[in-house]
Image (cartoon, rainbow, N blue to C red; front, side, top):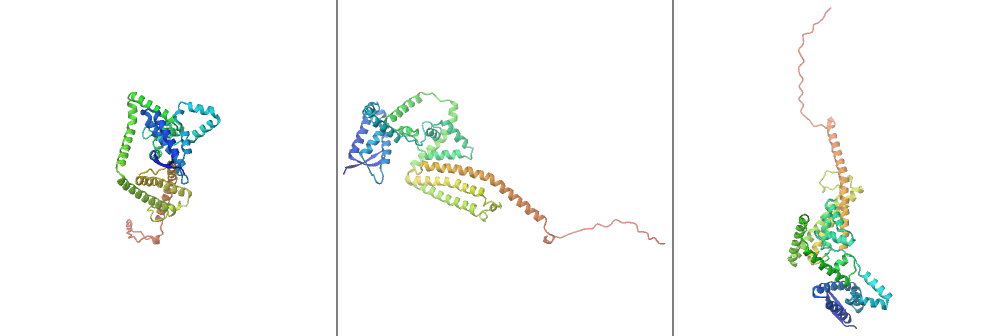
Length: 400
């Protein structure tokens, strides 16, 4: 039986076989020895994060240990130090061209994954638009224009931006920036990204002031960013006890809201004639129409989904861990936007019809009151004065 060791890579715990550990340690030591002190730590941090991520994919309930084959597979994907100059790859290609080409394609394809991150190097508020643009390989200006136009659609753009801000992690490392653009994550690419970042920083230091107009446009967004950063710092420094209390309060509020919106939607949907609905509107006559049902369901989803996000936020505060999953959050966001649009269109269609029905019933009731039978009229005092007849001369009596 192979001897196993327990190690921690990028804050992740793994059990690894001894020979696999020796191969991994030698690989990391080669990287440490190859690079200068200026870029060594950043490259090592990225490589360790990538190794930990790949190791997590290889362990399961049935396979709890990292073996030599797992380490070699990860190293094949990330690349060795001597492959950066191309010497080792050329020798391998000459020795076995078919096998080398197949392995290279498989390795690159295995780790060429696109992931959605916030691009904090191209940022106005939080880098959401630039991150989406990088993911879909389009210009960030297009995404920003779309979000700006959605602001005028009942504020959907603002809500969508805030939700994405919460669920999208920032691309802080070169490896994450490579994944953001769907580029293969390996040693050579990480080195290139770090060098590009160093050059960019030096160029930015040489740049002059961007100008009055750009500063004026960016000023409101900088204020928002400062406020959000301030709130994040306060929340981070509150400590686990206060965070737990906040999370508990938020969860209680979210649960009460979910119960309330569910009850209200149920009444509007199934008991439109209920006395709980304090209105004179003839809702019961429309309650069985498809338009009313769809609008009521859309109303429920419009109120429910933000409360679900609030519930997850409370759970995150208690667990001290992000409970938001990107795929499910995006799904709920799309459903919420669709429900909001349907609810708005439904109100636009139903409200005038209900109002018209209500007005016609009022007019009918008024007409019925005006034409009541005499027998149903109440007893009223009647004072009738008959004016005297005008005086005339005494009529003459004619006789034969």
